[in-house]
Amino acid sequence: MVDFENDIKNCVQVLQNGGTILYPTDTVWGLGCDAMNTAAVEKIFAIKHRPKQKSMIVLLADARDILQYIAAPHPDIIAIVETFERPTTVIYENALGFPDNVVNKDGSLAIRVTTDPFCKALIKRFRGPIISTSANISGAATPATFKMIDDAISSNVDYVVKYRRDDDSIVAPSRLVRINEDGGMEVLRG
Image (cartoon, rainbow, N blue to C red; front, side, top):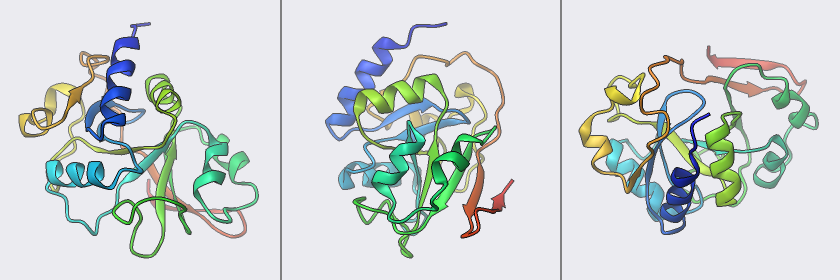
């Protein structure tokens, strides 16, 4: 396995200082920042030229962390999330503690619990949730690999991760779901 320790250290420092990163996720390359830092989130919106009403995904390292950030999730949410066999982003109602520019106007928040070793290590070392949004200008195609990322994106972040730049594997964006009161899933994006 390639060593990503230097990338983790550099990312944590940038995140702690309110900066932005370009990093590999369990799906596509993403733009990220401290999900609790309003100004950092604004930088991501600016880099992507993304409309403010379109909220972004928050990455967490462990399913139990959902309980810290969502008021009254489904009682079996940890067990449900731990059964996912592919990257799945869940839209939750009643987000707690996030800045207004992270939470949707209706109070909902999209969260993915990552299984990716790099992302998991980064979030745990940073000790907080991070933003994850595809590394493209809003409306443009999502780049499938690092080599496809537009210079307008990579030149405007504070740190670009070196780990996995040569990985040409194509992975689809995450599945997007809501968990119903009965524990059933409504798939919004397959």
